[in-house]
Amino acid sequence: MAPAAALADRLGLQFGDLTLLTRALIHSSYVHEQPSAGQSNERLEFLGDAVISVIVSEELWRRYPQDDEGSLTTRRAAIVSARGLSRIAQRLDLGSYLSLGLGATAAGERSRKSVLAATFEAVTGAIYIEFGIDRTREWLLKVAQPEIEEQLGIDALKPAKSVLQELSYARTGRAPHYRLVSDDGPAHARQYVVEAIVGGLSLGHGTGRSRREAETEAAREAIEALERIDTE
Figure (spheres, rainbow, N blue to C red):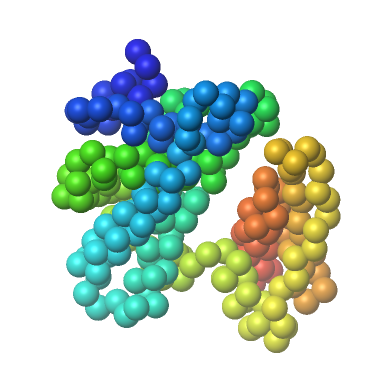
């Protein structure tokens, strides 16, 4: 069974035409190596990103009538971030249906959070065009139910770098500093290592396929280090 047909079956959606869902599963690296494959999923990714934002925003607005704009924005960011959407994509095993170039496959792009999140956005875009907003909303709220219903306080939903910045200012009066330790590998598979420094102390190290991803991981480690210091 073709990947798009297998995915449609897994999602429980009866597409009249699988053309768009097929395109949603074509990564740009595959098109670079196989030009005859046509367009990549990037245009559908653009559309799906907007559709997800509207549906999630509407649902959070309904669920949290007492939240102000800032709180709702924080809740939405936790769900529609690359990290949040990649969790949903992993549950749906989207990576196994994705057509990648050989180089990207060898570099482990199939399991990269940003790639999985982009694929989920593209699939959502294809579903929206095929079925319309109401059916897409029903589907999205079902597959994203764990993230939407997660009852966490606003502080727990804040991005790690934002939390670390608040902690750093509270302790030192200055923002944390992120130092690039290394930047190795070919252009299509860069590996970044970054350390997070608070008050002159290196408190966290992070690695990632982008500097932003590495900084986020370093921030999480630094937050844990500060929490340990507070309990000692």
